[in-house]
Length: 330
Image (cartoon, rainbow, N blue to C red; front, side, top):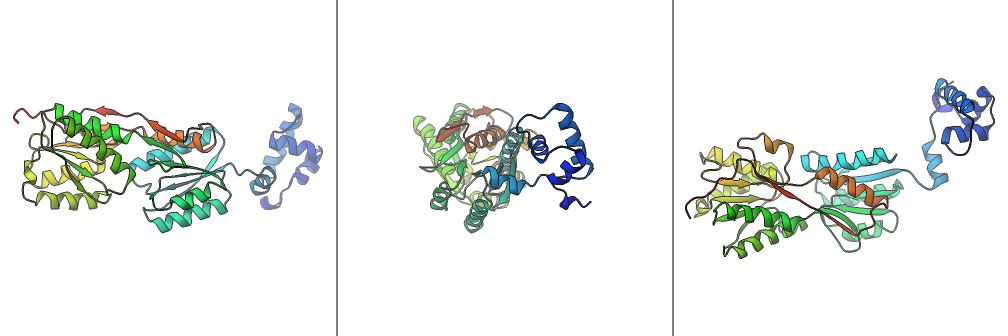
């Protein structure tokens, strides 16, 4: 008997039980004696029966599938967020469908439409921030949760980005640095804006002047941008750099080594994220820890309705390592 031809009727015939009893045993609905259930499940296994999940979802009007759209799951930050989503989904008996948008708004748009067409029970997205109206429209069809940014009318889960920029900058100031440059991502990004606010607030409190440079995300982009910065007049006056994320910090450390600049004694480098590689690079990176798996878990709980807050903000903390040195002379 071919696997794709096996039906509940076949199991009923071979087991000697009624179709209704077999259905209850297979779906875990209603009472079935232990002996009957054991025999039915054994018969189902032996003849290669698999549930028709499509038919089941049509009857229940639920797919038990959550769509996840990630800007780039090769980035360790988003890979960890995805792991958090998948772990929480597994515990609750859900499945996930993953699509990478690669930070392309058009790909993201097509992915959102695809998820709605698949009738997913919820959508978790790390957004390019250029399809808000589409996401608001998608909310009429399914639950939508944004990770890492926020837009009015949509549920979101994110780290406290303003606190991130503030505590990182304040630490550099406390370590004696007065010329601190922020190496930020693109200015239109939600995360960039709030981390910059924190940086500027700490600089203002210390009576210091802010200096910000921007780059598209990714190691290669940030490497080239900071290399350009180092070629600018007076760029060497800065003794510390606050990087948008750990990957930006890796690029800065690589450039510094290429140019024979000592990190941290000539240039202190601060990251944000606390990726797994940050503890093992040379020098180990001082950074701000974000619990990416917790972001994913909370996003999942939000999308299935177990967290009803419109905006969930998780706390962060500083991790001291060796990439920042105390500046003894001002």
